[in-house]
Length: 566
Ligand SMILES: Cc1ncc(C[n+]2csc(CCOP(=O)(O)OP(=O)(O)O)c2C)c(N)n1
Ligand SMILES: [Mg+2]
Image (cartoon, helix red, strand yellow):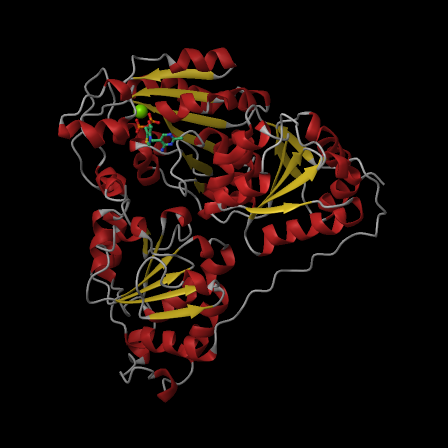
């Protein structure tokens, strides 16, 4: 059996059914072999787009993404998307063609392993036809079980070799690890005495199973629940949900997190974004971090207790301890546990009927009063986003690019659950948002996908507009168009620096989008949104691009937070 055919058969047998890429001679055969074995191939127009699509697809589908690339420039073009995936610990397997070992003078020759390792991705290589299937299966397993972005190079001479099919490979399930008894008891003891506990769930809690376990435990001890930005939507519908902790937190969420006496981070690193450089967590708070990776504990801030274990298993174990007779084994720090009466029901811990009413009225950003700066020529991005939140179906996936604008969709658009939000900011690259939205749309065709982009990021990644049109994806692409690299304008403008390098003349993005085959509209006021309403009713099969000419008198306030991180 030819090696390309064998690894395609093995990978599709393991469940890899969707593959993204740009085909050149080096990945032609392996891509066709994947298709022959039943995979769907999505042709991107740029390799960075292919990597970003697979990254977002993996995040939303909850399974490893798969990419195929041509050797040399195919790989270097994909690097920014690969880096975002690697930094996000997205399980993803990149099948990257490479020149044969003896082709020392090939134009395409680069040190793929070195360049891959430099991004934080994990390099792997097919060494010989004999071991090709084992190596490919191992790479897939590493991506899935260790949440790695693995770049598996496929040298052309090995690809062309022959191997023997050994029978369908088995992967087995990845084992989740429970916490140690001692750490679970210490966490239970801390929760038993906490008066104002807040849970902050992160990427490691992005599942329905983790949500159920965390909500049960939060109910048991009267905790309020929040998420980091990447896990937005996880607690949607829970009356005690504070939404996102960090720069995007609404005033009431920031107030309540700041007054917590216990913060428990669940699969959440508590980085500078989630904690506003640490300032969101009050000095009185005890901080406990639960993570399946012991190296993640305390990496971004000091914690009083680290619990190494799977989020759901830990939450269940701790709930089990709290359900037992409050006894000596819960008194790890010598304090008295709260009474059973206080622990049960909505009036326990941080929870009260009055707070529940306040949260219902205030926790959404759209309910926080603001002065609408729309002037007829340009629309206030907050008013635009609130109007879209009202118009677009609730069953939606929101994918956000990077830039000054990024808080508007993140804060003013609600999402149905954690899979409804795709936040690719681990590398802080602009230009990935459109491709990410396409990957998410392919993973969840039942939902309307909303790509939220700045004009800079939109024009950087615009080649994938053709992909969205070709695939007839149900997408609304909102461009927050301030005719500038607004982030830079607001970063340097106040200090009086010249801004010619970061400002642009108006671009007719609606016309550009029509050229690609999209429906489109230019929006300067709420009255211009009629065509979006019509599009939602008629669903033309063409993506809808909204070129929103937005006001931009000052930087979004979360940006000031961001600049402190530069
Ligand atoms: C690939 C890449 N190049 C440059 C930057 C620096 N950068 C950060 S935000 C930004 C401006 C983005 O402009 P736009 O997409 O219009 O969003 P805005 O800030 O105007 O809302 C730039 C250039 C980056 N983060 N990534
Ligand atoms: Mg801009």
